Image (cartoon, rainbow, N blue to C red; front, side, top):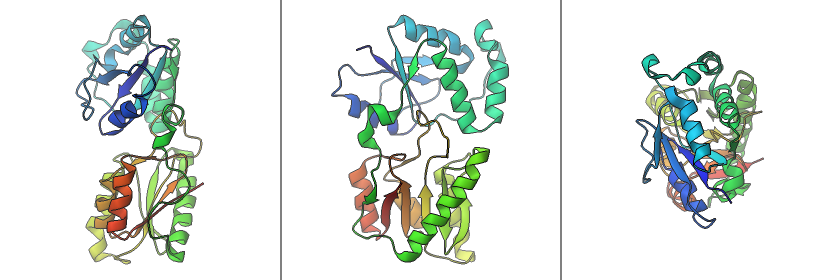
Length: 270
């Protein structure tokens, strides 16, 4: 079996994936863009997006046949002076993809990688244990109101998917308090926390986290971790609803313990 290249972004997900792969042969070649520091991992290869083509050729020359994407990579600020000729030829497609939303940009990246005879594989195939399964994870099940708010959140996210926006939203008493945009979950929850003391309802509500309908699940899977629980609690929320089989839960035992300590319901639905 050929070695896998892990294109690692920020956060703990790349390290969790390396741990999950540790019993499946040799570890992956860890690659990261310049300026991105995967937590707790040594980086084997650094690259710049301005020289994407030479980097992808390097992977093939190194015996890599499969690539997995994991971790947060924010849209880079690129230096026109650093482009090689072949990568510069990709710029029009890159600009159009970036204008189309996160999923469009990731589809473009995956297409470019696979044009170099590299297969992009998903976390759901490599490490399915990281994905949440269906059912209630915490000691407390959701209330009738929380379940209704979760259904409302699912409907909101389904409506937003057509314009490639939103893997998460916050709903309380049927009212949408926030939708996760390009700044991510932490920014959304912090915004809710900032406004709730002066808005109604001031407490309660559900954070709903799902993949976008039609999303390519080989990249940018929705993710929560231990830090999500105190952020949701600070936002006055009482529950979190995830999409079974589509959301990554990092350090699941710690997440569940934190939710139980906060008396929050945490569950997953299809």
